[in-house]
Image (tube, rainbow, N blue to C red; front, side, top):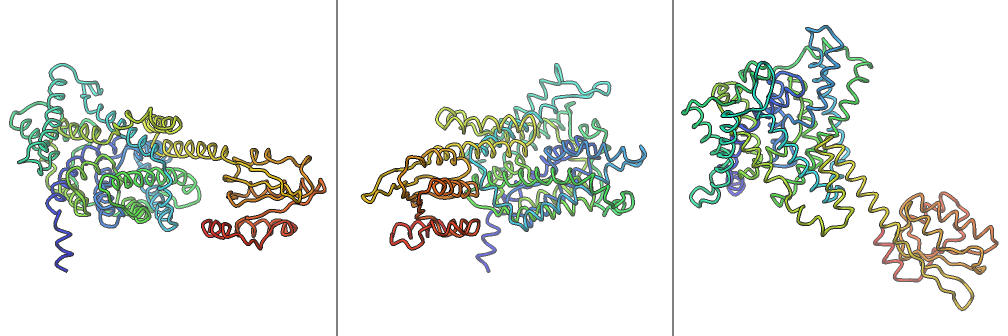
Length: 532
């Protein structure tokens, strides 16, 4: 028992300090994404707290941070707008439609976990992963550029003159602190992001510098501040929105899209954290936790969310490794909302931008530039395409497109590997020894290997070095046997796997007569065992 406790508290200091840093970084992100979705800042902050806490406790990846994200907020914009249009201007039904959609989104994600679909993240190729992190780094960078705007006459314009130089100076100072602290032996173990935020905040507050802060950022966006209470159960969901088929038809497409984006971003982030920490998370458990978190968030007035790659990397780089770091971040965020809103509102935006810029530098796979001319052209195309699609569209489209391109390239390459060695035995039987996978992509090449018209009366097709992979391959064999029979020739098929034999006989019982079952060949039995 003592050893168990020691293992859990060994990293407690790093987890707590890293969690505090993440909590500070979560505030402007959650507020910004709430504005993007067209809802009150507290809706984003509550989502960050509830999703962060639930996934930290029950999720499949200790150290990963979840909350309200931009990828989901972009989809929610039209949902909220359409929902508002369904009622009177002062009803604000869009918010309640959002809550119901988030609940259904959570149900879909939990079903994905129950059906163990999380394991399919392993099918994502490495070039797609590199493109994902590169694209996401660019998205994070571009999102921070909006922080360099100021409100003039009710319009957001880029800063100029002294304001711009002061903002850049404070951002660079934060980045310099984060870069330099780990290089000094005496301060190597200090949380550089938290130190950077505290130092820059102290300079701004003590120097009475007129710069954008978290408080001014919220007010410029139309919010009234961070101050709020505990999340409340949203009873109005079930009274203001008709729970009928029409509502389901409206929210279902949004729920599916949000669930897909949320799971893809969460599982990709989980994979990335696995690589950074050289440990392995549980993807199916993460699906269940994300789904449960979104159901609770929708019921208690949050906008929904998923894993946040930027904050997760801040946590990992800060030494956060266990569930404690995520719990500390979530609880601290709630404490900010309840008791320390005044202090947090004084934190300069420049300090948080500096932290996020360092996240961008740490997230981007700089090695991709070095290996672009060393990897296959198809992989390079996938890497670049996923990066660009992540920037111009969204993560789900980018990853799905990348996987499809990679799968097509794989199919094409394997389609070219089908071979047929031919020889004639002393008894006049012509033998075709098939090598390579037989599937939908290689059928044409397979058919071209045979010369039905000029072959002798006895033909043998040997599949010991081939794998019959799909129904298209079975159809190709059926058709080939049919052609030989129409030509009045006898064909025998050897070394088919037991599974393939069963499928062929089930589809066409007459083929049982052309398949050789009893084969005294030790190679066949080894191959058959491997294929099971």
